[in-house]
Every structure is written in structure tokens, then in C-alpha cells.
Image (cartoon, rainbow, N blue to C red; front, side):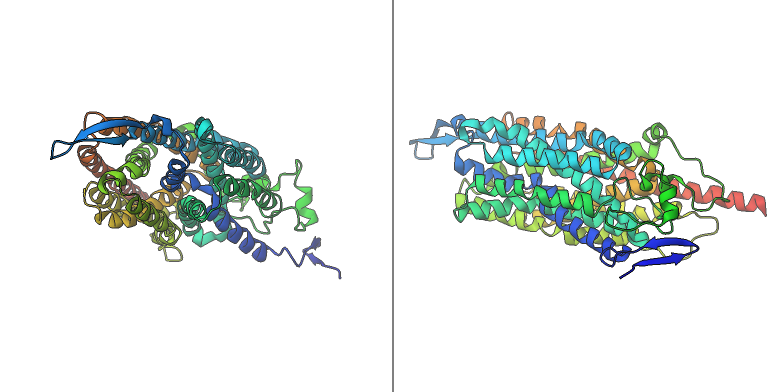
Length: 502
């Protein structure tokens, strides 16, 4: 059967298996599964710690101590604070690397495109899973590099998948936040590993299976994603992937074999004036970037400290009862699955104005920025409520803490990515996203001194640290306020311009 058709004098070959709409849907669905099952697994650390403790990792750091109870009888108890400190340090380093190296990954993505960035990410992710698989209590130190490369490989999956939102036009922010929600929910992967471990499946076998799944990532890379970057807005007749036919006219315009980058650089209307694009340096030095960076850094620190200290917190609140610790650890991990359900609501909030008439002279970017104010405000409010519940030393309240944590985390990271795609030029998305994640990572390193403060001078009671972080979270309200005032300033300038021209 001949699948060639003639349009405007050009012969176009169309494959029945790779029509644009069908391929776009398949790209979206498989990307969602990839993000949901692999990308953010490192944030399910609390579930993996339970398994690692059962296996005896860093158990040599547990020491016998003597306690005197109310009857003046000496009891010997096992103090594993040194073991907890090692696990907290591993997560601190992994979460830092996850964010800090996002800057390098953003440059890699913007400069070399999707294929190169994903191959690098797949290599790192596979190395990480293999290192965990072949680790043992005697080789506990392997967890340090293993969790770090797992985190960096996972964030590359997310970065290369978020561009899929560009294929869906008016639903762009919804798709971006949905992928970020899937990234959050993928932390439940370690819960699955914990449940399999309790059913008799070894830690080694689980991670070897994850290594084998890299073949799926490779197939997506070559067949369902572009070699370069998906532009926004999409040029007419845009296509991607090595299996789809292209028009002869489009083939003639590709000098270096990279259609994606050329179509992004070409103006859609050659008669329209070309808008001056801010440089990457101008983006970094803008107040919009600096205020947004502070907003993300404060709330991210709150989340990282909660996740990194969840196991010792549960140990303290349950008085070391293993069954209760396991029950609450499972509850936390299960709630993480809901991230993929919560995140799209934030996207819908940001896309709620799409298709509606804009104010006179208002650009699409200005309308998008105005719509983001409500999202930023709600995200900050959620973080304050989550922090208050996390500071409450009452065990049943932690169920509510888990729910607020997953809702806020899905709003935070999805909203962060969507806001960057709105507020800054798309050609700098990877670099700006990488810069904000990298710089916020430097601030998140404070989680380890906070953990040391709780373990040392505060004798294991995190109440005062939690109160301090709750007060710090209130400062995050500055960001939605600043964006609101920025939008008002733009509207005022626009009104003056219209009045002057009339």
C-alpha cells in the first residue's frame, strides 16, 4: 500500500503506525509510566532504610548503652543513632546531587538534545541500581555513590519528559505538573521493594530487575522521543522520531540532521517582528528568578528534612515498636502514590485561563504569569500547614502530615517547573530549571546540620527545629506577592502604552 500523499506539491510519506496524534499519545503515556515507576525513587528512602536496617547495613555503629528506669534498675539498650546518622547523610548527599547536578543536566539537555541527555541518564541509573544490587552490610559505603547516581539519572528522565507538555498546547502546564506528580509518586517504588523483601524477594534481585528495565528506557529514547528538543509553540507540520516519514521540503531544510532545533529557531510568521529574548545571564539576575529561588529553597529544605529524618522520628514517637514503625512507613509510602493524582490540579489552576479572552494588549506569557499567582499562594499555604503538623509530636497526626506532605510536594515541584516554563524563554528552560534546582540544593544541605542539632544538643527532640522551619516557611509567601505586584506593574505599563497610542 502506498502511504505517500501530495500536499502543496510536496510528497509526504505517512506511516499508519506513527501518525502524529497516535505517537504523541504513546509518548505521553509511556513517559508517564517511566516517571511514575523510576524517576524519583530515591525519595522513597524511608522504605528502603527499613530494609537496609533489617539487612544490617551500618549495624556496627549501633552501641550498647545503659539506661536507668523509674525503679532504678539499669537496662541495656541498643543506641543506633550512629546508624541513623549515616542513613541521613546518604540521603542528604543524594538529594543534594539530585538538585545540584540538574544545572549540568540542563546545559547538557539544551546543548545536545534529548537523546544524549537520556543516554547519560540511563547509564547513571543503571550504575546506581547495580551498585545497590551488589552492595552488602560489609560494603555499606556503596550506598553513597549508588543513591546519588540514582537520583541524578532519575532527574534526567524527568527533564527530558517534561518537554512532552509542548506537544499539548493549551494543556502544557497540566502535563508538566502531571509528570512532576508522577516523579513524586515514583518514591513508592521503594515501598514495593520493601513489600517484596518481606515476602522473600532479596534486595539484590529487586535491583537487578530495575537494571534490566533500562532496555525500556532505551527503546523510548530512540523511538518515542526527538533527537533534539520539542519546540514551543509547535511549528505547523512538526514531527519527531526516527520511524515517522517527513516531507521532502522539511528534509531539505535540515542541514545538520536536527530538525527540532531548526524549527525552534525559525519564526512562525516571517513577517512578524522578532521579540528580543533575554540572555541566560539576564534570567539569573532577574528579581523574578531570585525570589522564586528563595521560595523553592525554603520549602524544599522543609521536605528534605522531613523525609531524611522520618525513620528516626517514627522510632521516637512509637518508642521503637517495629510493627508500628513499619505500619507508618508503609502509610507514608502509600500516600506518595497520590502525588500523580494531586499534581494535575495545580496544572489546571495554571491553565484555567486558556481559551478565554485576554485583556487588551496582554500577551500569552503575561496571562500565564498572572494565572500562576494563585498556584504559588496555595503551594505556600500547604507547606505551612504541613510544617505545623510535622512539628506536632503526636503519632496519629502524622497520617495528616503524610497527606499534606504529598499534596504540597506535588504542587511544589510541578508548579516550579511550570512557572519556569512560563516566566523565562523556552530556549533557556533546561539551564534555568537546572540553575534553580542547583542553587536550592546548596540551601538544602542545611538539613544535615539540623539533623546533627536534633541528635546532639536537643537530645533527639526536633520540636524547636520544626518550629523554626515553620516560621521560615512563612517567608515563602513573598513569592506569590511579588509575582502579583509584578503582573500589576505590567498591566499598568500596558494601560499607559494603550492610552498614549490612542
